[in-house]
Image (tube, rainbow, N blue to C red):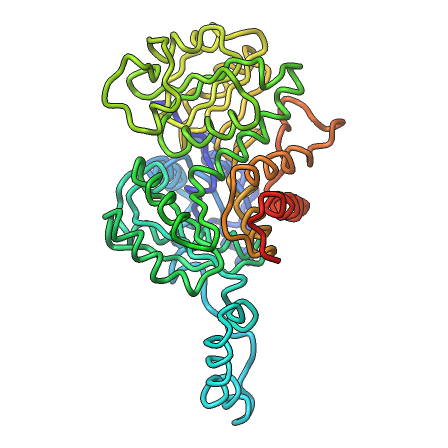
Length: 463
């Protein structure tokens, strides 16, 4: 297994005390470096003539690595660790989101208007004209984040409770980047019919539904059925968010290598939710030579028992992933760590583009092929060109809610991708910057505008 680099996912806060002597802090930093840790912020807690107490933030590569760093510090006889904490666990304690009122009750009159008896007038107004629910309630700016916990990140079927931290984080991102009030809804049932019925029953509260971490192929059916039966936008982010950002990055990467989407051979490894959606969006954008692979190799017409989604992209060719990559211009990985070798990359066409997006360990480590590719992207924040869905879903829903879209179409995905790609100035475009930062304040506005315009063109906008 390839070693991970230290990152904030495994961040420690260590409080330690040591004699107030010259060179002691330097010894501590050397011990951390020798253990492979990344030292971040150093805070002075207390100091006198004899002793110093400091807090140190240190990034590790895993829980085991974090313990090695702690042991390395403990080996310094003059240093005593007072306590150490896992910063990631601390951040999640008590949950990451809460609900706040938009107004306060300062008088009996306020109470009478916001609740009984005054609220009865609002209820009657909505009953007489259901469209008023968008003006008189939270519906116009709320999204349900629905998961059954069957495909949590790359961790597998962990269940509803274990999915909740992810959905809380998603709700934070909706609010922070797009001002949308999103609510985590983790269902203790993985039956397709039950999920569809449950979402239909709670839909009156929400202006949109974001499906998350639902395993393939059930995710395809759940989304399709909900789209047919609901009059609000339904969006499976694992599929379409990934596809949008992948296309945006690819638009700019192709500019660097002076190739066209219509002419390149694209190999996608991973035929689950993300892989199939990427293939569909690339085809919509003009790609003509797409080879989809799974754990058994090329998805070929000669194979039996293919799902409906795989059948759509089955080709006559047969062989392994290595066979598929020979002469390919682009590799897109949404699969498993370490499945691509440097030799496989070197068999690709001139100036290959590699998008190895498996997390936390990509299909191939960028360090192994840096000199063999024109552009490389991953799903990780510690490498350039992170393919991060945060670039897509806040703006997609902002645009859809702003025009009260009844659905989200593939044309809306396409225009969202183009909008993201357009934010990288041609003068700044290079092999390590093919995609804007998730903190670029222009992103949500640009995506929302593009999505709203596409919704109007497709006839699904209602304001």
